[in-house]
Length: 325
Image 1: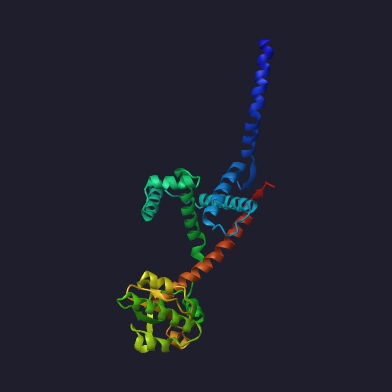
Image 2: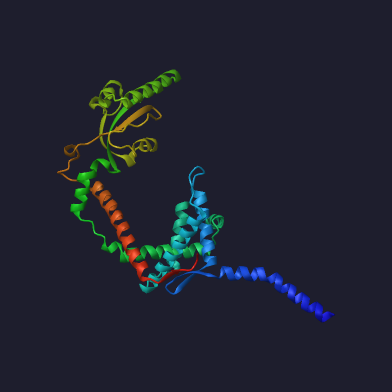
């Protein structure tokens, strides 16, 4: 009797273990092979959940989100790319010491004004441990160094390319300096006068939207810099402007007019001046600030293109087999 009971209990325990064993086998199932490395079902599920969490937290409620299948595919592509970079990093003998990694983590915490405990708490919300974060940061740093060594060194922007871009696009640059006109409307001390000035600012803004001449209105109404020159302020360093003024002008396209900006002592309306080639000084060429801006833009465009080409070539040379359906 006891023997039969023991056999029954053993059989029952095996039945209870089967789901756990099946789940463990499923987690260990290989879903992709990348060179000499593998990606398991567990790796993919973890990466998918993390990516889904990031998308949910960064996507506004009214904006369409990718489907579960699209997120899973993106997570798998990211894992494959990570393993490719890992193998090339090993081949190139790139490394990052623990001291350097500690320094990077400290710099990140200092920039964000957070403690190690606060960083750990934030990572926990993202489903990451500190060790996983350090490993991911290490990979990112090594990846940047790899790109610097194998890709960026091949990207060279000539002075002729900078000048050609400037001549074709100077009026459309996202500038550090911007040619502006302005209408300044000083605020009286009394509330009734302030309300009247607010209404006047709205009226002038409406007239400008309907096509009124900015220079004429500036001459008639502006009581600030450039009023005797049709509101012309010349080229202004936008980084030196007050935050509210900078926010009003930095996205203006040539010819566009800002909404009235409320300042402590004024309402001000800006217009970004449309500059002709001769006004831009094309023959003289860009300023040093504009030259640096254009070079950085062209380098980024060239680097993105070169990197995509390089990555496609690398992927074609690495054995990749996706097993998952």
